[in-house]
Image 1 (cartoon, one colour):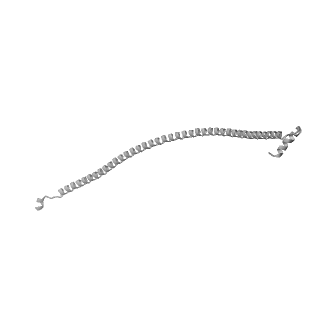
Image 2 (cartoon, rainbow, N blue to C red; image 1 turned 90 degrees about the vertical axis):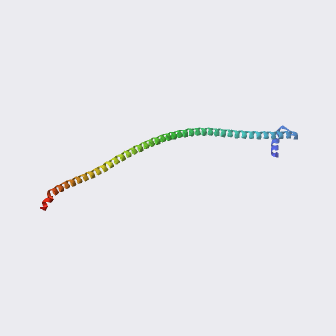
Length: 171
């Protein structure tokens, strides 16, 4: 230690009489011990302050951790609700698609039946039309034949009327 500290101690005790070397040494050792104790208390106080700060920060971190856990739980519940909503929507859309598919298939079946019926009717009409045309042609041919028969009959009767007996012509 420096002489200034020693002098300070000496001046404190100088009013008490003569200070011997041994007592100076004891006094100095006591002073050094007091300084060391003060230093230890100072370090202890700083350590206590550091521990208090660490405890405060730890408490803040624990509180923040709890808040984050609550936020995570809230987000999980919110996402679970969204997932359930979307799953319900998917289910309803699948049902709608299935319903539309069934309606589509029924409509296709109905249209196919209508098309087949229309085809059969058209075929029947075509057959009736063909038969009618053939019947008209046949009737025309019959009428033509009847006309020809009538004309032949007329020609035959004209021939018979104009026909002179062969014997009479010779005479």
